[in-house]
Image (cartoon, rainbow, N blue to C red; front, side, top):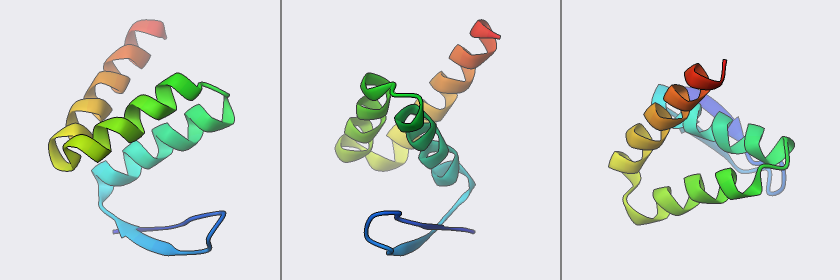
Length: 68
């Protein structure tokens, strides 16, 4: 488990490896001002958390491989 702390609330949570990967995608999108990408990830989690997590992470990795 990986412990992450919300920079705004100070609340901490333990994330598994997949959850942490998605968290990093969301935070990096935020830092790089890719708000559409960030919002899509957040929306997916709100609709169907477990499946969305793995599907979104796989799609982002695939997109990164094509871009690189």
